[in-house]
Image 1 (spheres, rainbow, N blue to C red):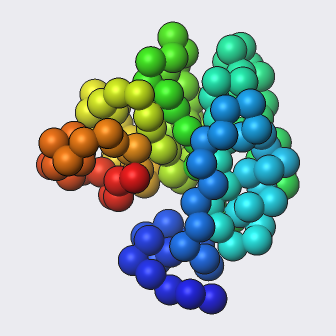
Image 2: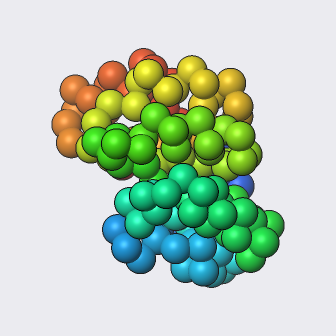
Length: 137
């Protein structure tokens, strides 16, 4: 085990976070990464139907009892609904890309979700820090 601020924050053994990996971030891969001690991630872009996305979260929970995340591309037409589903389903970590997750931050933080935005600039990283992000990529 290799302890870092990130491993302690997320509750994982190794400082390894699987990227969202469009079309590859499925429950089986996310659970395998989490079971190996990293942070596995489900990607929402492969689940245009919200029932399928919710089923993917539940499947991941069946495959691992370790923390895993959901990667939300904020430009997705489903981002708003997914933002609420992760709270309802008790997801522990949310990573975001393609936008500013500020409007969801209060809801996610109140639910105990660790928020890790992927940012494209120092300015956005500073904005995310002020908004309460737990870490940035």
